[in-house]
Length: 472
Image (cartoon, rainbow, N blue to C red; front, side, top):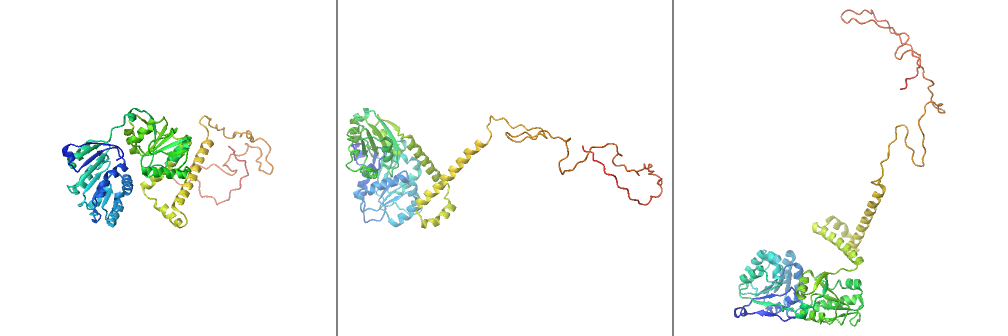
């Protein structure tokens, strides 16, 4: 253990096999606490002897990484069970002796008869205060564990759920509390800028921080050996060697008066006290979301604020993250089967990452083209303040600006050359519809015989002279 702790150990609790560590969540610390349990694993027994339950699949990967680094786990078969389908095949092929998994996955494997807990001698509930949502599943798993198995629990705070678990499954458990905060740390107020990082890549954001601030001298304080290795790997890629005077690693918290201090993970109380004892410096912490509360508990007087890089870098990073989130959303909604089938022949020629980059490039081109078109359309449309165009009376169209105007139409001029001329209109001829031989007919007697006599023989009507039409 990195820091001294105080244990509440009455006589009954001292004889108990169960221990509850009420400490901030830190997977290196959790791995160190279950190292004695793993050391007692019988290598000749092909069954699960130690079971560790953690809240999420990411926690499974983190604890697996820390346990694998333990010397006591060199000859032990450890299986991370985070996904039901993959874990079922893994459990059948590996026959693990130590299992690290989530309650959902372990419960599903037990129901499928793919995992047996009859030989478990010790069980760990890591970050138990976050397992409350899995309380029903947790009860089913603990019912499968032998009653004589030792139970180990870690939690940041003693919640009502923790009290129920300890009363029901860990009777008389010994409580190990975190060491009290050093007095110098408790009163030393300092602002710490927090940058959230991934647990798998704790030092990946180091380059962005150094580029954004550009301090002449930087001290980096890793929380443990694993983070130190990650920090040195990133420093090598950035061009800073082991003996660099610009950026140096200070595991013990001795910053040497550097104007910029970067914490990679929450430091221990002793390291934090040594760091705060030096001159004031701008402090940035690269921690996960869960480790933010750990840092707040380790430095209660410090003010935690979100790290804000330079505007250009921040906007570029936000835009890239928005694109990644759109891709995640598409994948969550369902795999794009047709698109995957279209790209599959290209896998023989290019790396999948290159294909994804080319597809993203085409997407950005299409989006840029659509944005330009949307900007052009409003410019072509009339503005809201412009008056609508007035229509002119029929027969006299308005002239365009700078164009040709015909003026009013006239009908009293000479005829067009080669055209048809009607000549002057005349009104002194016979009425239309009456010929010269037309005579009035006598009224027809509908009741008696016709008074007209026999019909005369047919005689063709003479043709009418041409008359001008009444042009109305």
